[in-house]
Length: 331
Image 1 (tube, rainbow, N blue to C red):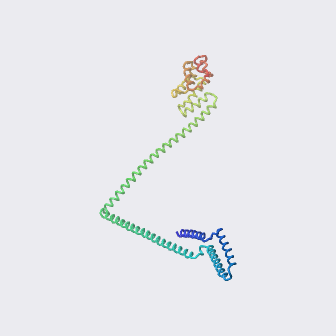
Image 2 (cartoon, rainbow, N blue to C red):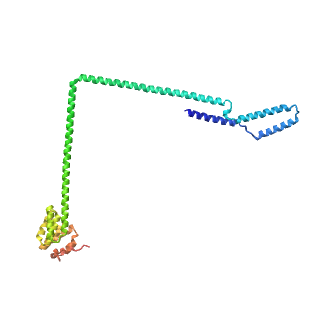
Image 3 (cartoon, rainbow, N blue to C red):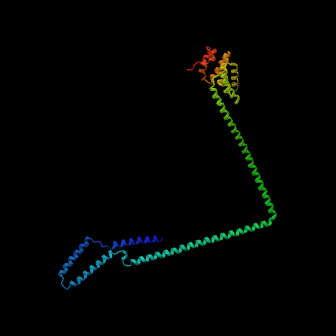
């Protein structure tokens, strides 16, 4: 606030200085110069024509005019602060600003004091009301205790204890049931994991037996390996099918036929079992049954067509139109 007033005062003084300077500065025009020249010429002419008695007053008048002109010029060139009454004006303005600032400070102090007193008064009232209500609550509780009596308080405590014990028991039973369910789920998952581990071991063992069967030369040795696979996993259709194939190599056609029937009872669409049974029927002389099984096998697996065309077990079917149409290459 104070700085703002000082800045405003400085701007006002600058404006006044500029205005007075512009007014006080004399403007020299050609007309003024001409008048001055003419006045000088005329004064010279007059002075030359006047008598010696008039020279002294005229010299005094000219000196006064020059002094006045110099005074005016110096007054115009002086600063605004060096002019008469300007210092008094500035001091009056500063005094007025100081007085207004003091009045403003007094008003602000009064307003702040009034607000602080109001806040303190409200705080005291609030504290008084709060303490009063607190004592009212204490008096009400004391009256309640006096009316109910110590016996009722004991019953209330016992009832509260019973309710709390019952809730704790219910919570314990709930958690116990949850723990039982978790235990059952954990046992089930443990059992599944154990079964999976056992299954993995079985698969690894069977895989090793299959690898070993591929390295054996005689069908009898391969049959022994297939029997071991069937002992580990009874009903393995792939092992039964390969065992029927090995039986065909040993010329045990009826045995191979029986093994293929066991596979087809569980999986009628097993193309390899149908192919092996067709070979068994062809070797046993049942040409129609052999062709029927071969036709079904080719329906499920068309890649057996080339193998059937070169199969030695189908020699009895060579020349059969139906057989030849089945094994004929498809364009």
